[in-house]
Length: 263
Image (cartoon, rainbow, N blue to C red; front, side, top):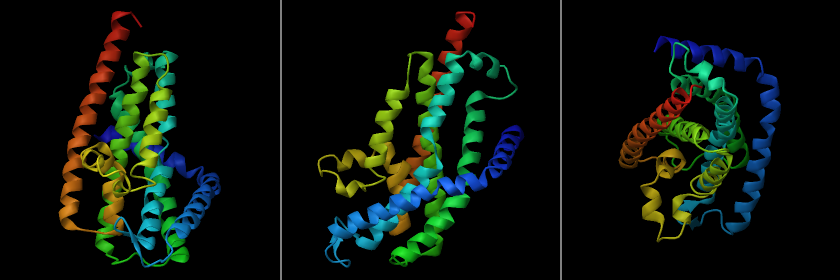
């Protein structure tokens, strides 16, 4: 465990060197929020009205929360880096290091996420207060818990991205799979809560990774409820175990193929 904490610490410190460039690049988040602010403003004729159980203020805070988390994790980069390691043979060198390759990737990626979250989240909260005001039924403890569940959701996202990247062991290019995955996650749960989806598929989505990955934490952020929190934590615990095991299975099978072929 100490070596992964060291990897985390090293990557976090390295990220600090690019603080200014990251802050400049993160202005894109402000533009995105402004666009959605105007979009939902046109949909809510009355700011006090509810659409599928969400007020105008809740919807903007929901999107602000999910977009902030989405901006802090670069799934495409994770997939590309792992795919490149496999394709150029660098994976054969990395698997002989005194650490587990999967845990190494997770430690580095979570360090990068933590750094970005510490920068973007306060900025996003300030932006939210300036543009739309306080969160309805504000609960400080609830917001902190929601942020923690959001970080857990990011870990699940990381595991999924790592597993997609590892598919490069068995296929020429795993990027199309990530493209499909990212677009589904971006639309369902990130830009639109599950309640905005057709009623026929809502029960399915509530048992899917989307519930644990982005929708659950964001809903807790705008409408905290302890019963719902328990549901989110149970789902997140299950999906972390499932995707970690799946990732390790893909990794071990891929490494076995390398050894068999003398790579």
